Image 1 (cartoon, each protein chain N blue to C red):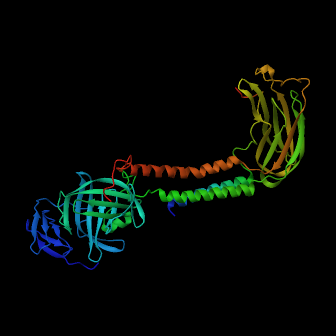
Image 2 (cartoon, one colour; image 1 turned 90 degrees about the vertical axis):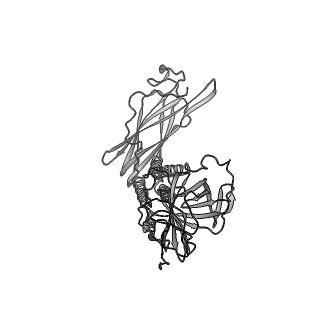
Image 3 (tube, one colour; image 1 turned 30 degrees about the horizontal axis):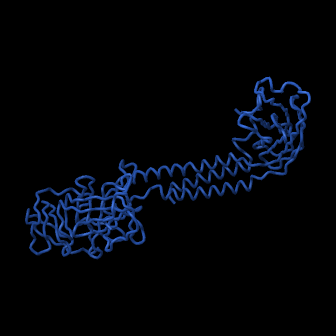
Length: 49
Length: 441
């Protein structure tokens, strides 16, 4: 295995480890929780045309 | 290698002593002092062609020995060649008394070890030949001439000699044809590694792209092998991600609650619980559904409050659905359900506090038509079903991980494509080969 492949293998291991940790602890940078409640008046309605 | 017979002859042109390294095999020898071509096939050495030219300094001085592919070879002859004076390259004739002759060729971008074939390659299809079951694609076609000669050869060589040439390639190997009216030769040139060519005391040239020159026609992509292992590792990683999703992406048993909302009324606040979260940390999935709503939106504020610490984890959800009819016909948009996910909620006993309000869209499009600040009188109530469950899987995490894994593969793929483009651009057959015939087979 070349040096590049070895480094990429390490990279993939890191990704899998982070993914495993996030799955185990229920973490996501895109989670809805923690976002501010919609402030002010929401003028609902369709975007249709 | 045991020493072959080394004889010395006297150059009839300049009187210099010329060593013969393959005595008994060589037909011509070029004097290293005056470059005159001498006939050594007969005991009486005679001048074939007379020159008064100083010998060129060679990268591999004649007489140099080196081991290639487990055989020790001695450089005995040198040819400087070109295509009509352009695209020059060099060929060294190697000799071993037990293994015969080989070629060492370079055009400054790399070195190849050439073995003459005793059989003609097989024709496979237009521009494709086969040797020992391996196929070679057409790359070059042209005429080559001998510009400079030094050393000894097994045929009568002279500067100015011209032959037709054609090259066919596969990664690592080039199949070269040379021929004229009387003779046709095929040579298999294997690309040598930098380590191998150092056996002859030569510093290997800088590889592409640092060389500033295109890759050799038969140079394998330096990214090709890595690309295969990168793809394998990427697939393994993908499988591992899927496995983790299956293992940890499941939700726990959900708890369901219902709220009744009247459009246009003030927000209603209700608390539901207890909600038990068993794991030290987990995601929490809250889904809201307002079945049957139309031209309505429901604002929902969630607060998951720890009964013990009063720590609150908040989120926002919006359920909305609209429909109508215009000149294009019926339309609808929005969704009657919405899933909201909270991240990294610690273990504990929680209450879910929900603040929700429903508002109607009248359909006129003007701001005054939104019934948000007063009761509209006869509005029926809307049912809001809320389900909360510990656990859940963030699909966004999966896409992010996949992008991070794929980016290096994409970069390598781009480098590989750049290399192959640079290599193929050198080919006479790069753009179109429809007007070429196959008269070399």
